[in-house]
Image (cartoon, rainbow, N blue to C red; front, side):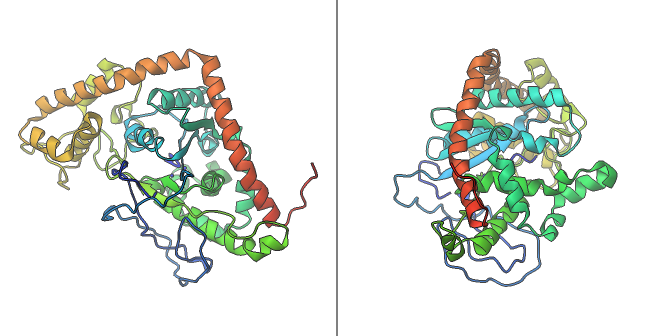
Length: 415
């Protein structure tokens, strides 16, 4: 899910050609692995590699057609309520949700439980949670098509995390790159256990809803691989005939989700360093465009953003990361094709292009900002949206967690 989950989450129809699911993964080296599918499969081993890296190809030739069914496939995703929602969150995740909600069964949540893995301000968490929900709606998430809720309002997230933790080898968590980086910066005495175990919570977020696909960014690929491996492991340990003997339906307990990767916008970079991802945690606010930045702030940030001294403008030159990033932002915000942007901007100087980019950003974000102010000022409306979303999510999550309790042999309370 930064960890926008699920930046916590397809077989695509021709009406959604922009997204391509990729199936190219390496494994965590468990004997409980098999070729993955969104449908139940018979178990087969694929070896004992100890590699912990994973790769996702962005070059799939075509999305396979959706199997005929009246039941929509499910996608889950979310964003942390830490800091301000910025252009990277929007273009890399939220903007893409709008087209997905028309075709898929979608659940979009505010992942507040993930926001406490590092020291945080309690009052700010409360405010940021509501702000993030309002931004979802202001950006176009339609509650008649998608469920919007707060992660902590569905307690099954934490319940399933604990159950999954018992099946998660500690070695899998020790390989997580983000834990290594953040614990090294903060020091062991300042790092809580949650920073190590939050990938299990992320797996719970996804598996709880029997998700078919998960939109992921570059920094979440390893976590989705862990989710897939963990689903396979639990299915092997507790599913099938073992579950049936305990009175369950048998078969797989969890669907194994597939990655969904947008071809562009999955990784919007910093305005001050084209090699670093745009981030809420970056010390300088100059490094990002926040969705609620007023016009004068956007003008100043684009005017001061890092560029280069090369003539003209071009995509995909590794020596010009800032140029590629700014052109990508313009392409995504304007809605134009990459080739059209290339032809429009290739002979521009930076002064002309920055004016064009600024005007396009301001025009695009203004309606979102106006709608946000309307929503955030109507507390009763926002509360009801989140309550209804939590009710819908709980109706799915409770079935899953009860099945896991049963399959793991727990004696359940009578009704």
